[in-house]
Length: 268
Length: 255
Image (tube, rainbow over all chains, first blue to last red; front, side, top):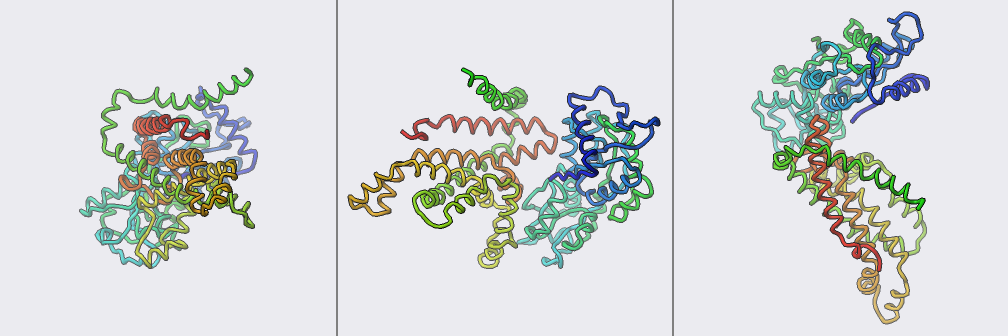
């Protein structure tokens, strides 16, 4: 499910709305139409809309706050969802400035359609773990335990990065698993574990860390063969190129890296 | 004549998106896409669950409608308002609520699990439950309206002629409101067929057991396969329109 968080005051919301309305019917120019009234064209201000994979929710929300603090006058809005859904939205014309995907395959959909501005940069990597309810009631120790009778497992759909990685890992372990549900993004799969509806789910290490009070994580060796690389790119249809590029630069900077590493992501 | 303009606008508003589906359909690859196993599976599942859900709605909803229309009791107005809550509740919220009650750790679900070893979520039964939850208010409202409009003198006449309550209900009341029940059932069936939010939240998504047509369409769209989504939508549209148009007017309107 998509989560939209709006930051800043009414003025920022109005600015985004005005930009969106102005953009209806296709923008004729993409030369950084920043609403800054200043004389210098490199002043970073205005609204930035970031479409990011669901697994980046915690880390990017923090990065958004830090970016806004470092660049007063900017507002960062997020749309977190499964990477495949985001890629579809972007290709169908959704207004976004930056796209951060959980796998190169979904990023390729966007760049192949000509919607990327420049080459995508890999900024982090992420690895799968098995999420289980607190206390590991079913004593799951590895992928083979997931097919024990009576164990219900939630996976991400194969089109979503975590689902694709799960398929690779399960194939490597030669485990034939039939999940009870194929979720649309990794957070939905995790919430099924939190609710106690399933006994296990294959999610990212970062998701388990973010929900440490509700779930436990079980590492398994095959995850090393199915590591997800996360690329990030500024989008061609961006209406605030300066700020978008500044945000991407911030994500790639040392400060950005620190936040991402603290969340459990690996360096690229 | 002044009504023609807004009526025409309404017609265009409702029909244009459907026309868009037909126009944008990938007609060249349609046969190949229709033959894919997932399409017919999702369609069969949708039709089965919607019909089962409608049966549940009728069996439970008609007595409830009778209770609300014919029996005076304190709090009747509040009860009527509560019964129509699923109508205004966002379907996903309905799904969450069903999870909280019937989920493995839910109010009732936990007891069901420990006593009978039965869990509802992620089963086809869960799909039927979710669809019945969102569709029942339609039936209750339609039947209650029909009951209120029906002439009670027939039932009173039956009583004076010696008919018991159950006999009067079966032989006098029900035939009197049959068109209302049919109309309500049709509405419930259509609503159940199109249900998405409660289904995906409560029943999950798995091809063959819980992936109904609306879920299949949504998934195709999420994966960027717009053509597949259009084809699935067209199939659902054709089946629904065919069935609804096939219903004779006289079956669902009062004489």
